[in-house]
Image 1 (cartoon, rainbow, N blue to C red):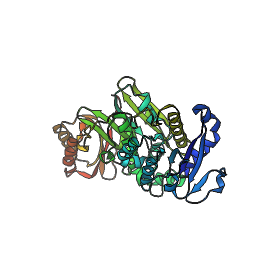
Image 2 (image 1 turned 30 degrees about the horizontal axis):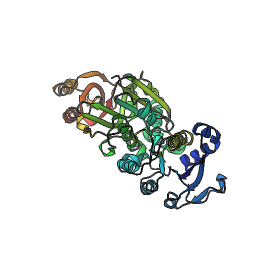
Image 3 (image 1 turned 180 degrees about the horizontal axis):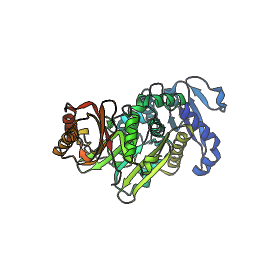
Image 4 (image 1 turned 30 degrees about the vertical axis):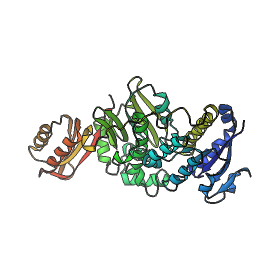
Length: 434
């Protein structure tokens, strides 16, 4: 049986890791597939003699030319970015090449067009490595939970943000201080915007939600809030109330539509996902038959991400062998037909809230605040007055779930009280129990 021929585009952390894994585990992979996987091309900006590749492997910076070659069956795209990756993948599929990619931004923003083209050309786009690194969460949702109706999922899906919040929690450090360390350690880029502003997590949530609910990819409809405004003070107060602050991506199916949101979130400290620390990732999935299941592991890095890339290659090789055209038997986004379900706006989202306000030490302040909340139909779950800071008293309030539009209106009224100073801090709260 002739080998399946592979081109790897990009030899950075992930591409280099995939190349190493394919070489080190070649015998084991062949036992799993029954066929040799042969690397015929690598796409690099400059020759890499340090890789000690066989002379049969051609190295080139002309990626468009590589994907047109007849001795390529599968293209592994691990160079990142939207352009020229989009154009290169489209060209590859026109020439009948299957695609393996770790490119979450590309899929979240242009996946609908890419998957449509894949179907037209009878090829696959495999993308396990695009979400949560080495955790096989895409396979879990597409296959392992296929008998279930998924109600919601919540994930820590950005390791950089989780590292920062963990350090703030365990050591009481300031956000800016931990961010600098994360950059020095290589967890955060020189420009950390995608990580700390939630964009990376929103890309991943877009993909997870599409596979979970059978909806088109809709990155532009994800409510996205980063962690830059989370303070050590709020982390401390939350813990005094029995909660941890984590940066979550949440997708929830409701009667009126789908919630897609990424934001800092208070979670009860006894929840397993609240105790996922450092750069680790975790995804909690609530499904109607199996109930809650949690998936935990390394969300980034050469080894974990390469593991997902190579697993996708193996799946495609099996499909090439055992299906008529190699296009596979599992729909690209888990459903044969996608549903155009309503995506709720931020005003329509429902969640509990942590509120912190700094008030003058005067009679009647709490009464005024609680009256505003009561009139808005907002129930208070807990209230805590903190020791005086300078001339003001921090007041922390936890509320029961309420639609966001009502909370927005109440916060506007509280903010207008003359005894309230500075901006009211608002962090959403999830019990993750239903």
